[in-house]
Image (tube, protein in one colour):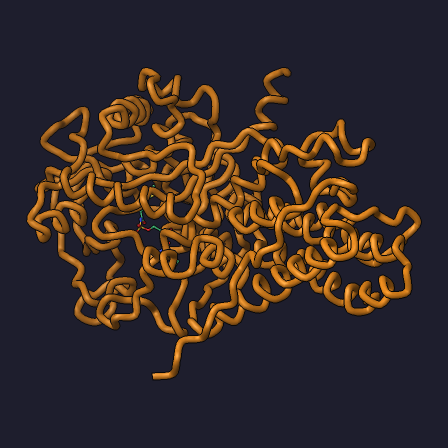
Length: 539
Ligand code: MSP
């Protein structure tokens, strides 16, 4: 393979590096679930994937939170970083790298990067005056603050007045280059609404921003002037670069950038768009490095239509939700119930209704009743497909893989689920219409087998294409269909028995196509894959 081929085969993506001032919240879980679904689907397609997540551990906000908890900052960071890792395990997130910005290797990368930008003459000492929101770790324009100098994103905290010597990054120098980037590469920022926000922000004229703090210890010292501490965002964004190093590799920029750079996708929430779509590319331009391919800013989640906040007491705890309902339920709801990119809402009744309708009824029931019929009418083996059958399921299923792949590519998870459910619902209707129980009584065995095969194959295809979103459920389905050990990427022992024309293809081509289920093989034991959930009782 030449270098271009290897590169097009690689896919590196990131979640934000989460602040460790408190326990993980549902917003962090949301971004990470989406990133994991993208990563899993890319792995299915045979790409070599690097999913990066991690924690952002420096700055005033973390320092203060640690003090308030009566702990040293490092102890507190270690503890909370561990909580993130536990949650990712609970949610079945297959991340490849967990980048922590307090790691010593990260400091080496930050110093090397700082030096490059310094050598370009893009860092200078100046006077910073302004209102600082510690919760955002960002200076705010006076006109953007609410009454009493409160930040709109954190209205229960006052912004603090600062007047201090800081080092500045010459962002203004990159005004034209950034505008050209947004114009020449319209896909750089997605969705469009976010792109427009950024373009109009930049059009108003960029100001240099300060990249150091005084009176703050919790961070890396500025390499050229250790009296100053580096601004948390300057160090945090570089956490993405540090994450690219292999575990025991010497932490040089050259090593970090040699295999996976440029990153293909930064997945973030809309509140941190400016950092990723303006500051970050400008920093990289200054360091003369290639830019990431795309930045996608998703929307915010509310609870019952209201902003979540500790004060309102309406925070959703992702650990509790996942312990109660399981990873697949949580993953499915957040990706199916909201158009990714738009704001979304969590509502208990809708959560339960969605899961019952789609997973318990449409998908789960279909598998369960069809499997039972296959036991009754076909001796517990995968039925024989009807070769001349131009059945509606086959017609739908034949092009489903392509449509679903396009939806994943556009991060339209809701559309991917909906496309798949169209096939599943058609499977239910087909079964009712063809009534194999009647055909069986009439002795029409070939017909019975053809119908049951088409339905089971629909369920298999649905499970395969959903496996990036509900990996646990999809595995259970594949097992009940007789695949003994299932790893969707390498797919599945049992594949050697699938129809010969499909056998020599790559796993993705085989399993995203119609007709892979191997007739005559033993099926697994039918048991419900997703139990109906009860609505909570009215208080
Ligand atoms: N530390 C920075 C990121 C640095 S990346 C180099 C940070 N961390 S954060 O923990 O505050 O936020 C992480 C992510 O959670 C952001 O993408 C943010 O948009 C997302 N969310 C926070 N609250 C959210 C909701 N209510 N809904 C959806 N996502 C939300 O910012």
